[in-house]
Image 1: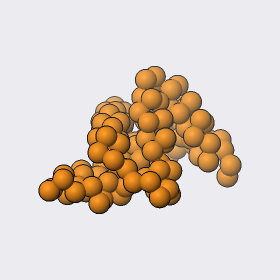
Image 2: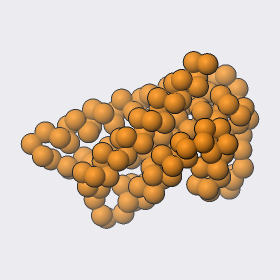
Image 3: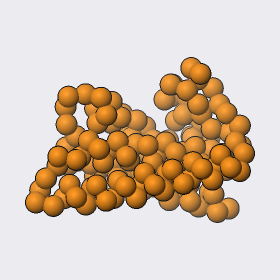
Length: 135
């Protein structure tokens, strides 16, 4: 599918929340490892985990508040839908999505600043998803 939205059911929402939590937990483990002895050999992996956690968390927020989530390759659709569901959080998703290609597909490594910015954006999204999912 190129773009659009997908309706959510409780099972999908719960599954996306589990993924958001798994990716976020893994990000924190990998980030902590990257901090030992100043090593950043795993920064790309950590940023990629943060991106996936943020995307899953955004899906949960949209499902909880709108009954649908973005589906497809257009990042603008995802940030626009999140803006409707939780104004302001779309900036965190946009931050993560701008890092996706560099961390996951390019030859340029992620740096410490990217690693920390990704973590902050991810944490805000995952925290908001937990709150939306509980409500």
